[in-house]
Length: 116
Length: 115
Image (cartoon, rainbow over all chains, first blue to last red; front, side, top):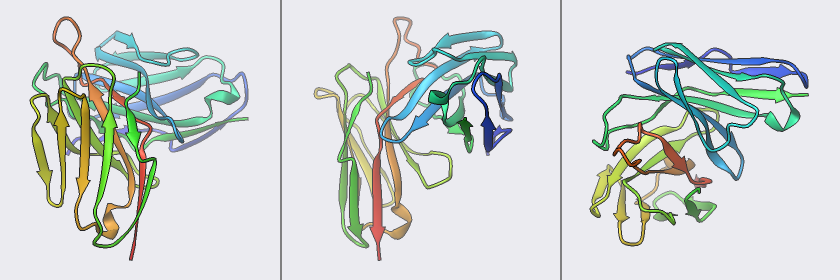
């Protein structure tokens, strides 16, 4: 089974701190994603990466950046955390099967971030 | 733009049926359905490709009406294990015919099944 591992399940940070959320997948998937989950809003895409060092903005990239130096690792960075970034963050990955309809997301367990 | 799911919440007794709908204003390539139990990661249920396919997974099935850009998830004879939040995720291809699996999710439907 594909495993997507997020390093921290729960984090508590203070406003203005720099926050790193780490995600590792072990099945050689090409594509990796960071979603944010909030009640009543569903999952919203922050950033995704389709190759090492390649990234594209999702629907809500403001206040976030990402890093993908190795294929298996995708990091989400909050340069200066704010209270409105308190949320559940989900990492996911897919194989690169272009147009096949088989790009199924495999999610990590999530990282719940609280910014005080 | 996020697809719209309805209803927002459903409460059932074991054995009852439910339908969850997902509507998009944009032309879609596929619709994915996921279920998330409390405190766990979302888990893939099924994918519907354009062409009006209907797929099944035990007592859970789904359909995709390409003309209306709508998908429906059908839960038949519900079990306690069906409880959770259901999300539809819509996939669109870019001009190069690529999506990378990037999905836009609905806001979720909370399903609660009581004994």
